[in-house]
Length: 109
Image (cartoon, rainbow, N blue to C red; front, side):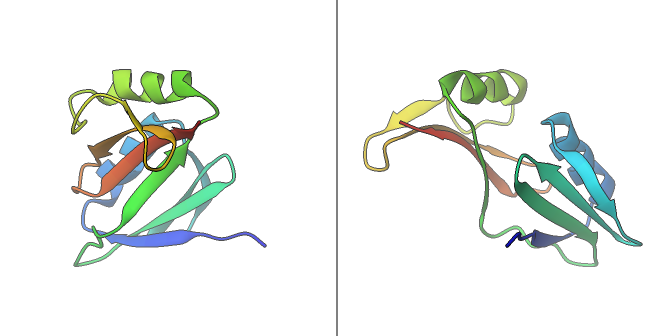
């Protein structure tokens, strides 16, 4: 079974460009929605009059190097530098996409 998480967006082109810059590719274009794919993760953004900004979009990397590389590209959008989260056993950081959606970058340790 596969799945897709969809979000309504008011700034479709900027949001899609943000995730494409992170390495996601367009999996499918629809009349007002773009579905992106990063590994086995798919997320869709649909142009609407209101935006869904709740929840967290999380990208999981194989190691700390992947998280650190993402941080280097997004340091200006990051809430703080990557850190080890003892409670969950992950190395992570959070950033915001162009619409203010929380995006997490992590690896399990």
